[in-house]
Image 1 (spheres, rainbow, N blue to C red):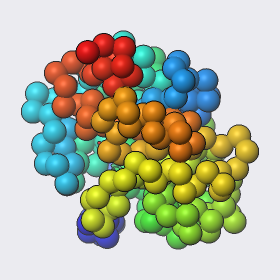
Image 2: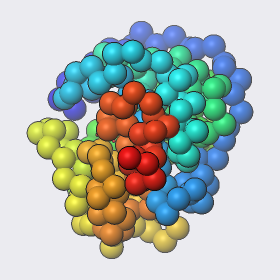
Image 3: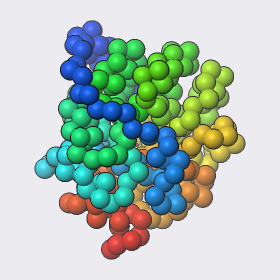
Length: 252
Ligand SMILES: O=P(O)(O)OC[C@@H](O)[C@@H](O)c1c[nH]c2ccccc12
């Protein structure tokens, strides 16, 4: 699946057209997660569909979901912009950002420098870089480019070996451990536990995917995660504010 997505990204990049500058000032993504509102940081994801689950939200409105996430006390937002596989749009990110005061991560498959420019122009405060999708030296270049443009980068990995290779090049402030294996789609929320000895001082460990319950949150905290990235389980609720409160055990 990942290689299929990456192949398709290359064709999108060939047809790249510079988007209009949305003139949205940068917000500090890493800082927001470093000082979370609760005992663990929360990145709430605006997600309409995924290749493994199909359509997650029929009545989808990025502005409304983003606003409700903010009311529920999310620290940051993540917005899927990949259209072919996740039914996202660049405009969803700009809309979500305009509607809230939260820092926003662009969730997409970045393999080329022009996508860093694009992320900047549409208003992203942070980008995702996937260790399994990029050669470590290219990942490092993209990381520095994002930083130069005032964006943070969440460096996502699924295995310790890939992280070790990346750490030879850069020391990312945000390290995401994807609990979902992109080849089998299986999730295992204990994954973060394998990484604790490898996280540089000052870097934050973000546990991503497959988090549904308060028990899941408590477990990933135990395994050393500083923050979580949650999409599907929040999006499936009618009201995303309430969904956050239920996830944190503040409502039933
Ligand atoms: O919907 P979930 O299981 O809560 O997962 C959210 C997020 O982690 C997931 O969307 C994700 C993690 N890494 C990605 C890379 C690309 C696209 C999507 C993702």
